[in-house]
Length: 301
Ligand code: NAD
Image 1 (cartoon, protein in one colour):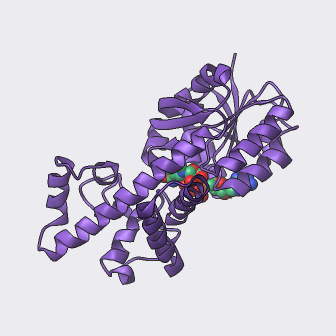
Image 2 (tube, protein in one colour):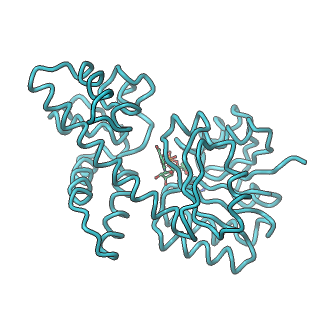
Image 3 (cartoon, helix red, strand yellow):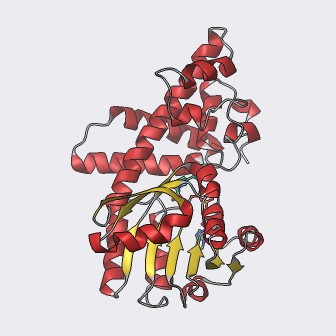
């Protein structure tokens, strides 16, 4: 029996994820507000439709990959819940705040649906390759079904805990990512000042204790990692505005829980500055150019 997947939000991440659902042989009804995104989805084997409700009305699985909490709350409360059949499994893969994730889970549960927050890690390369890591917050008995639905897009799927726990894990992960990216960028800037070649620095750090995902998979200097956004003038990838959103979520959560996160606070402040200068649409690794004093070489759009 063919599985019908409704996929809502076909941007930098959702585009590749929907393509992998189609590649797995599922019927993918895809919707986005952007015409260009719908065209890309059609080329990748999905069926573009004209609205969220049209996408979800016969779905077995609904997957959303939207920018932030307000988009998720609106789309679920106004367009998915009540329009999708109650047998449908609802999976939100966006990165949003824990409270909104729990609120949407409550609305879904009250209406008779199984729901999970299932944010991802791995970036656009992993979204395209079907090798994302998923952090799931759900009722325990639902996990096997959720893991199976995510399989075409996943390298590893973890149940972090109950509803909201997937988002909690994700904001902790992304606070590490923001901090390590800034550390990598600062080190490149320093290396340059000391007369070192940033490409040679990659060779050294990738095999040394300063190594992290931000170096080996996403090096912010062009050359060593051909798939990294630094090679295409920081277009696409993970927008600096999205990184700022996640760092704010982490700081809000830290303030509420009493956790001490001074490096997270400093990282948020630097991304706030970079966004304020007008570069929120560039990949977050472009913050290297702010630290190097080379923003004049970086296009805003
Ligand atoms: P994006 O801006 O490229 O894509 C979001 C898409 O949602 C856009 O195409 C937009 O048109 C669409 N959209 C917005 N409102 C909509 C609505 N009401 N109905 C239908 N479509 C709508 O963003 P992205 O980089 O794909 O990120 C999506 C989510 O994934 C974010 O929460 C982000 O934090 C998270 N994330 C991104 C990355 C990354 O590397 N880009 C990695 C992990 C997680």
